[in-house]
Image 1 (cartoon, rainbow, N blue to C red):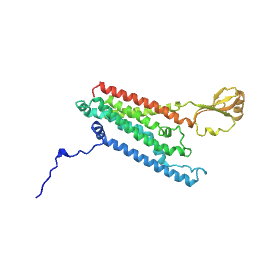
Image 2 (tube, rainbow, N blue to C red):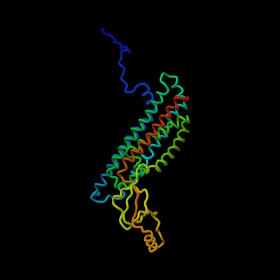
Image 3 (cartoon, one colour):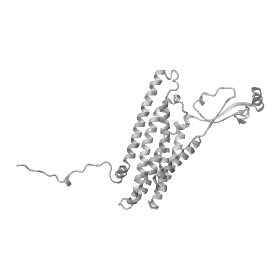
Image 4 (cartoon, one colour):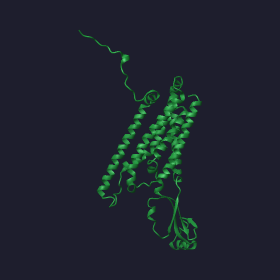
Length: 322
């Protein structure tokens, strides 16, 4: 005699789900973008680790630091890497931030959401929160891995620490800049309400913002000044400094422009120097030991901008029809 047992579907234990509700819905809606960002982060990190290992092999073969490093010590891959990292905040702003809400507005999904049990504010907070979190994680990981490569070998890599390819992609600046531009992207998308138009406007804003940031960067620190004899060698402490300005000066402290005595002949130049009593070079600079403080100051400004843009986006979506 055989007995057939039929399990009651209601009695089956549901498989526990790590993410539920609105969080699961938002991530599922943007799963393709999420996978692309995660893949970019993993592949970029592995590329950096590989390039660092290649650099170490080259330096070990040359006997560095006991012997000079070969020139060039890195190939085109290093320049390509720093260029991609520099462009990353703008790419995330255009392709992640701008379409985030604008696509739902354009396709009508946003209007559908307002008819559901989830409030509009909660839906917008979930969308913006996961967008910013993904941006923060991806850029923080890439920045940390690149800093791990650059910092011990900065003396042979050639770039000055104030260059965009270093200052903006190490420490807290890369994630802070990416968060700011991404917040600008979804704010523009909310206002424009069309995906393509939002992406174009965000791209223009990104170019303007990064250009302004490049002009503002050297104002994040307080310049230092050093004087040394006119005919003397530049002090070794200035080898790693970023030049802000330089002059020539007299013994009584009077400063003259660097080319004040640039005459046609050496005799005329010497006569000008003697007439004005010029005895010193005066060098105004930012030192490498100021880099960390400057980066955190800049990151604080960018994060304040991110908070302001996010607050505006939430205020606008709570009071205006989607």
